[in-house]
Image (cartoon, one colour):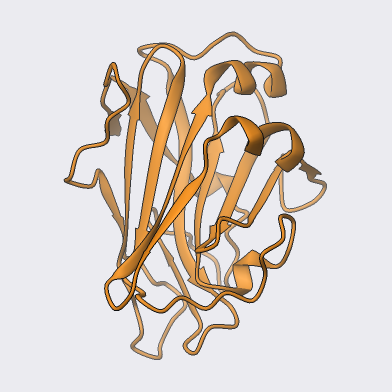
Amino acid sequence: MLKIPYQKDLLLPDTPLGKMNIYPWDDCGYTPEGTFSLVYNETALRVRLTSPVGEPTVLTNQDNGLVWEDNCLEFFLAPYGDHPDYLNIECNALGAMVLGKGPARAPRTSEVEFLKPQMEVYTIVRPGKGFEVNYTIPFSALAKLFDRPLLQKGDILRMNFYICGEKTPQMHFGMWNKIDTPTPDFHRPEFFAEGVLE
């Protein structure tokens, strides 16, 4: 089980918590390794995702656009074990996002207008070196979205992390926890892994 550390000021460590380097569907030899970092405190979960792609493809600058066609970093989160829904948080190098909620690929409800303004989203592109996506997910927002209490120490979350690009020079679909399906499909919560707020 992934151990998510407590950090009072939500400062992320330099060392990543995990890697997105599993490629069950790719046979072209292109497997860029992404990383993720997580910390939490009493009020929020802080997230950083990184990609080694130094010249990311960006075809959309609009929220709810086709960000997964760009170089994209994604965090899928089921914050409450007794609730069937999960969030898909997908973000390109410009910070354009798809942010939905639901029990499966469909039906889903867009939550970008509600949640994104609360997330302090920012991205950093380092030409030739890679890019990263950073944001904070307030526990109060999750509690409202899922009609559940605030998350706290000891709670178990289910999640997966992805690095992808459907219309990049080299299509790729990488992940942290392996999805065992014959074709690419990130919307498979049965393959989420557990993390505990330590």
